[in-house]
Length: 348
Ligand code: NAD
Ligand code: ZN
Ligand code: ZN
Image 1 (cartoon, rainbow, N blue to C red):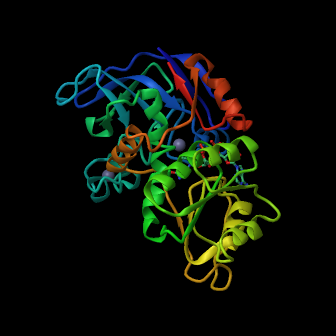
Image 2: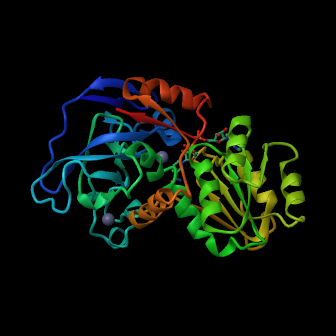
Image 3: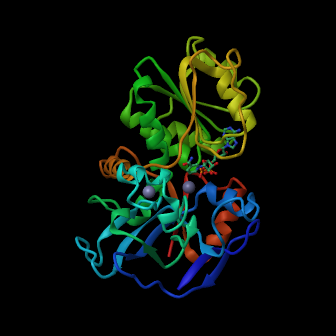
């Protein structure tokens, strides 16, 4: 079968042929119906030295996957070939306290997990291929009626990650509050929709790209601004001088974090989602009083089921451009060049 693989650190992805996977006991093979191209894949491909992460290329990319059950390994019950499913991407040991709580992202026995701290497309073969081997049925969520795998795939990360982040700040997202989504790409355009669907906060979107700002406004953002000079003042002007109660930073650069800390409101949340590698000096007088600065990583199975439900009910929809698997290498180049609006989804 075809697969788009990471073959080395600090290289480009390669389209190649690999054997079709065979499901062992408890495992499920999915016929991929959609695999999203996430910006994290670009960080993964380009920015790490060998040994910096506990993974060894080659492996197939694609950690944002949905499809149809294709083959069941011995002992798998409750699924039938042809069932449409979304894949929960973080694959932990399934037994430690964090995994039992559904937080496989933070598995505390990585030595017992199929790969430490990752999943399909992150250390193990992912979904940029005709078929995907999933190591356990618990990593699958049935698709609700009316949602295709190509529509659902981006929701498993670009939807799930902002949903998890928004949930952490829900108590601060009151009617008189303002949320800022920084970076309106794959994650950010879904963050705007999720905020609008689950809370009454005003929403400001920030992105240097005109197409991304237009998309944010089309998805319900109340205001769309450009980063850079004047941003802090514009956010203050739009919030009666108070600043933003919740900032979701889908960029995470030095500049985006410094700006966020400057326009955040005392008692607010600044959540770092983007992994551009920036840092923010935090000190008593350096950030607003009682500002909570936090990171967040992906989400869990029950949250994915909730995001899928929002989508099935028409409250959230990933704006996608679909590409053939044969063109996936080019998709990553286009993502790197800032030429993708919303999410690119590769459909085998
Ligand atoms: P994307 O390329 O689809 O979108 C990024 C957007 O940010 C683009 O629209 C770009 O124009 C915009 N941008 C760039 N610089 C900006 C700035 N200074 N201010 C405002 N906007 C700016 O990327 P994506 O797939 O949505 O991923 C976003 C980030 O989140 C990446 O760093 C990715 O690695 C990370 N990510 C983190 C998690 C997690 O769990 N923490 C999960 C998925 C992705
Ligand atoms: Zn991702
Ligand atoms: Zn675990």
